[in-house]
Length: 233
Image 1 (cartoon, rainbow, N blue to C red):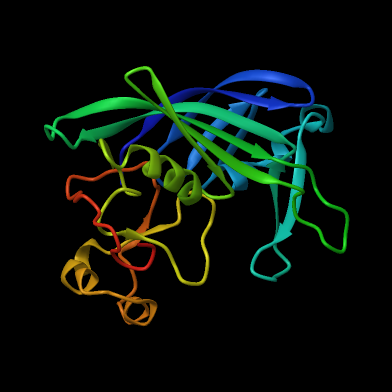
Image 2 (cartoon, rainbow, N blue to C red):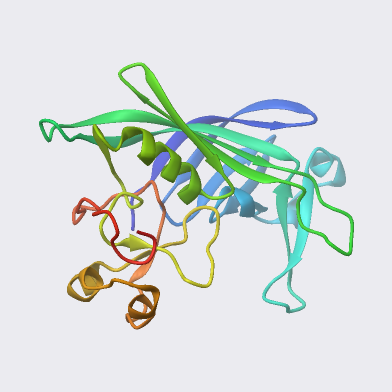
């Protein structure tokens, strides 16, 4: 994916609110916060690009969650105790006449503070999605984009279809877990095999997926997802 899109948004923490611009190449999210460059594959994994470039004073406002990479000695520090808000355009299909139009999807991602050891991690991590169609709001919340989109799908299923990777026939998730955003698996190259999947065992027999995709992405091979398809249904 070589596309690059930019979204206006807000970053909020205990120091106040910043107006920001988020760059998305559909692989990584990049932004500048109070003069500090950050990048990450998802909102829950936004890290400083080069921490050595900044003074302690510049970094004072930020709170970080320190985690080892796959139980190695490599430590990464991702932002927490903050929230992000941005609006991204999404294509919607009208089921009545099959027309397509853009609608605004508000993403509100809230990251809590670090829990004390030995438990560790964050005390909360939540995404809220709000889709506006003809001045009507449809919203969903959860720990994952999938959960929040599931809530919205349940509200619009009679009238509209989401034209993105979440709403695509060949977007699915790993049986071993997923990230909150951007870890969908694309099975487009195995469409015939994928169409025959009826249970978890058959799903696990598929070859490795082509790639990871963001739920909000959409390519020109999109097909409307059928109920009960694949692993996630």
